[in-house]
Image 1 (cartoon, rainbow, N blue to C red):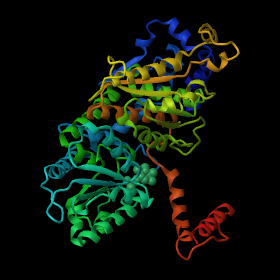
Image 2 (cartoon, protein in one colour; image 1 turned 120 degrees about the vertical axis):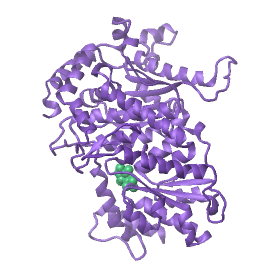
Image 3 (cartoon, rainbow, N blue to C red; image 1 turned 60 degrees about the vertical axis):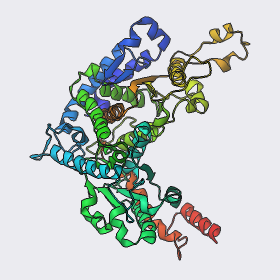
Image 4 (cartoon, rainbow, N blue to C red; image 1 turned 180 degrees about the vertical axis):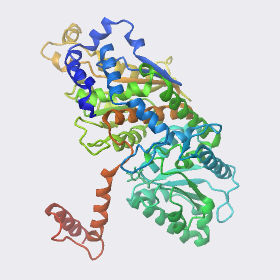
Length: 543
Ligand SMILES: O=P(O)(O)OC[C@H]1O[C@H](O)[C@H](O)[C@@H](O)[C@@H]1O
């Protein structure tokens, strides 16, 4: 059944007209307990969804929608290892990465948990040797810098997590190179000594052009300085493709594997997190995985009305598909989470930016939102104007923490900077929701002619996720919360959230075009007139 055929769908569409006539001021006045009732706790995360354009009836209809679209059956099919990634004929088992050693998860008669822990143990031994200095580079000195080379899921996850856990990084310096733009690699290597640098080449397929180009360039940089024999001590790989890693010249003992049932954008808890483990150590990495597990277990067991990823997934469907919101803002009030919006862009948009369902038929309703955002308070001085007074509906996710690792006293000598930061986060969601009427503006003494400019419309929805502190565990919880939210969206829409065919044609087209830009190339009549013009302009500017 297509989502638009569900009984709940017609009911939600009808209900949307009446609920959006009611302001959030009105809804809060009608139910004094709303601000605490419309909340859910999972692990260390307190999730407040009271500032959404919903009431109890909306939630009941959304629950019906989840039942009619078999969200829980689809979740259970994923957990049983069924091949729910239909277009690639693969199971989807990133939750296995977070299982405890004493648990099991059977796939085709084989328990994959011992495999997962075997790789984690190997990662632990390797990263211990980097961290204690016993892994020696070509001239006998310990490694001081790890350079992670990867792109997409092989970069965004480890880069985001490494930045987020800045306060926990006590191992070698870790840097990230992803772009095929030579500027990325050059700027990263500029101040490095090859003898104390180790490269981690991360690629699920080990055939991604950008990663292979950067890895080969890095190899040349190293070999030019230290000779061919140095490669073994300065390159390790993370991949599912052992054969291609061997062709590159990395020893099999220096390869950390994972499996095709881990999607790239769901892989930061696998060996793809090797650089993170090097930075924070294996015990902190275990805490990170335990954080995921807390939310995995909640997703599997919590009833529908108290299941945080289910609630958040259904709310995002409500906005994207029923109320017509095209975008969602991710606003972490934590500078160390500055890369979270980029990470969630891949997680959400590559998963659910689809138009057809698993069986190839059209979805029939708008799907994945445009995800964007910036760390607070920076965004307040840039784009929050549009959120507050613009014409578009952009639900926002505010993410903040009760405690800061380190803090400074603020300007008034009494409040800390972290307290001011958090006050800003609470204030933004409050003003977005409740606004300021024309009468209130005029009551402040504003000239009635100018008052419309200062009216704050309100009724701008948001979720607030408040955690105790940004730690490996709470970060794992937050990521798992979003992973499962994305799952719930895809389940309602009936799409395959685990493939990414939309990125393939662009890659093939770049390969086809590259010779036209290389020596001896140039525009050709076979090209469309725009591409021909661009290639001609490229050559004009070159010569
Ligand atoms: O890890 P790799 O195989 O190198 O893939 C890296 C990335 O490239 C692909 O184009 C996909 O769009 C991403 O989902 C993937 O994470």
